[in-house]
Image (cartoon, rainbow, N blue to C red; front, side, top):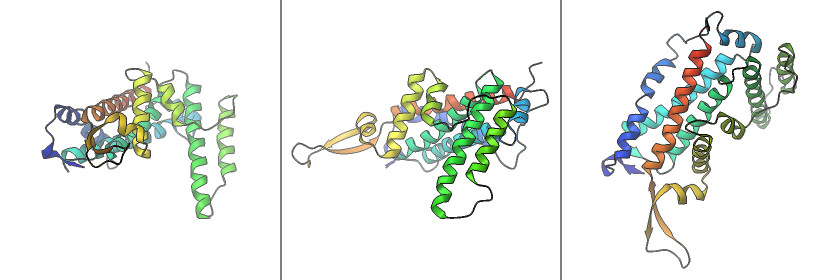
Length: 258
């Protein structure tokens, strides 16, 4: 953890500039404000009718809200607390990346059936993950996992989706989003942030500032670790671009084509 006063980096200023957009997004997701909803005859309004009660618009809004919340937390940490942690910023960026990718993944297909299918696949994953958590508590649920999954299957039949609705992993979501500026940049940024969140060694060796200390054991290295602001800037830019893309797609799908 490094106090901001000890860091005089152009990358830090660029990072704060990139994160400045979160202010407007935070206002947009403010729960006390009216949420932008699909207008009549818009693609999203029809998507929602078909996917009900797993509305495409609700799923995308939730994902984008989570992404914005993570990015704003990072901005607060840097701009207000004025502290740069070694690892935590990447966990925040990971949360933004995954959720932004999820929104884009659902909204970007031109096919309505594909958008609905992707929304239902996320619903299946959510049901399965939640069930695993509830099993640990032994608490009784209002509806069983099989009942909820059957509901999803019925929706799929209703909209003539012939394939079985299965869950989806973030590996698939990130791979299929493929932007920006290319699939490699998105996938690498996500894996780097995930590596930091998991405490893996390879991100520290690959993407952190390291100073070798003299007290190492034979054949070992003793390192002082600090955040590499240039690398943090790069992955944050990817996350911000994806959030922008998500909001643009959301607004596009909420607007009638004619």
